[in-house]
Length: 106
Image (cartoon, rainbow, N blue to C red; front, side, top):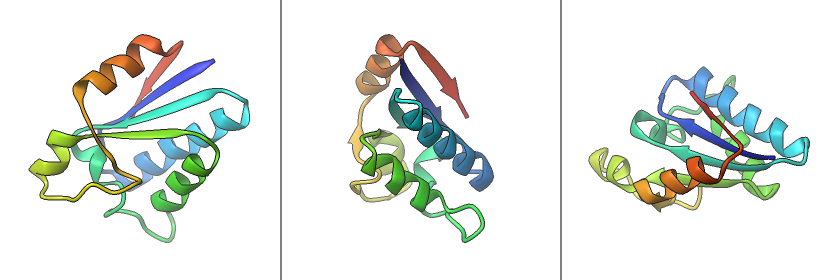
């Protein structure tokens, strides 16, 4: 199954759980794409020892999951593009929603 996950929160526990869910789906042999929008692009800044969003994102990427991030949202926060937060567009989010069998938002 193709799973699309949209994260628009900068609540660390919410972001952490969304990424843990993405990794669980990969473990079920699903194809997973995560799109970060709005406050969701801040997930690297908010990572903590207890809710390690960076660790979950690294695991996702190592297991062939994909991460996309709204370029406008990144620029609005004066952040830089990273491999874990690559500049993407609304077209990328559209494609994820269109191509996914299921979409989950956090």
